Length: 361
Image (cartoon, rainbow, N blue to C red):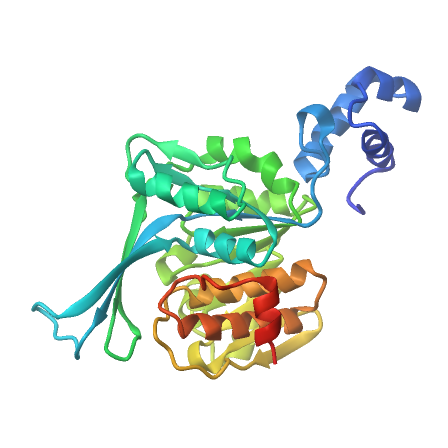
């Protein structure tokens, strides 16, 4: 709470001792004007130490995931893909979206998690929310659009199970504007971590990064794709943890760099406190105040790469929430990503904290 003034500390202490204390009582006890107490309460809400009416205090071990929820349709080619003609394939349907995948992984790992997103007023949207609620995810902050359908993502995988083509209909998230962001901000600010994907509009991402600079929550961001990486502001200060690949980093930096080490150094110079640069089969490179370190990928026999990056993110956040250093957290994330690619599922249905512990070397 180093970001609180002495008076804010005093007001917070009274709220913590009695969440039902009125502003007049707090003002009288502390010898402050009621208007001053009101201003401090507003500041505590903005910084995430208080959740608003009733002065409910935040949960210190909660992660909020903000971003895309979608229906995933995957097609596995039976033979080498031939452009311009029909290709035989095996199809499947599942739930997807970067933030949705991350929150499902976290929920299966036993993390107290909530989800903030936008779905259509359709059966796809209702199915997504129903499944998350069954896993214990708080979906109270998910809004419903009556003019756009729930997002969809189509993945075409080649005969080696690598992604050959991805098509995303994410237009619904253009409707997630600043008014919606302002409404959910107290819910975000009160979490230990906020994870956001760059399916959100640029002005919302800019507002999120700006507010994270003075909030008590830590902000993690995934750039999602090279085009969507451009939605982040030039100043990355406020982002505690940035997940990015080489192509996305080149967009953020406006030019490719000679080495991964140079890339993470430049991203940190732009304001990101910690960086996880994913390198595909070569693992990832992490950078923070302790330095730079390469985390190798877990050896695996891929069946479906969809969801691997989201699993890595969830594994990292899961371990960071438990108080581990970034290197140890990234090792867990790499393990979970490697296990995920060996499954046809986007999120491992058997995943749990105990299961992951048994799988850890």
